[in-house]
Image (cartoon, rainbow, N blue to C red; front, side, top):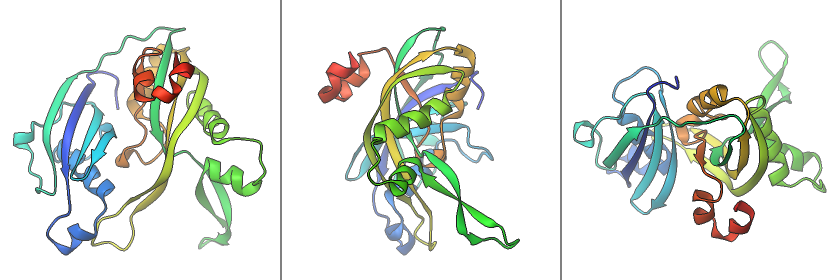
Length: 246
């Protein structure tokens, strides 16, 4: 996704059980995925990132970064059980300079590839993706490392040469199941919410990474790097950590 012409949108989605058997068996993350996709019509690529910012029974708020303006809700053809009821958009044109400090928040699917004991058709060990903290903990359940340390090192690798990571904290971690009801399986992965502070070292390439997103499972709400001035947004969202963030 190019950094030119980016649009930042806030959308409110109606998410609830549908009437058909398939809809009743589908999961909410899948409905959110579909409702966001509907906002961009019938396009072959995925020129957007998103994250859920609030949820309640029957609805979700999502933040969307895209390379094109989403459709107006009146022009979106979506079933009532998963549709946008409101959307507001503006041009996203951040001015970032070398040495600038920024707070960040991002939901990621942080993984590493490991060879497993099973073999593929060619008789070679299959490669499997694993959550980075799960790998460390399974290897040594007495490890002195914490999830903050492990995910922080993973983030450093993602931002290598474009930003210096000063702090990373895990605020939430859990399994996501995004499954369409008429299919036996779907996406199943660990999503981890990270907050912290960074110093930009290469503004142009840093914004390219913001536009393309971080990590995997971007189709299901991961990868959108949200930025704010130090001590502003995160201190309000996480008052219990305000002293760390100011």
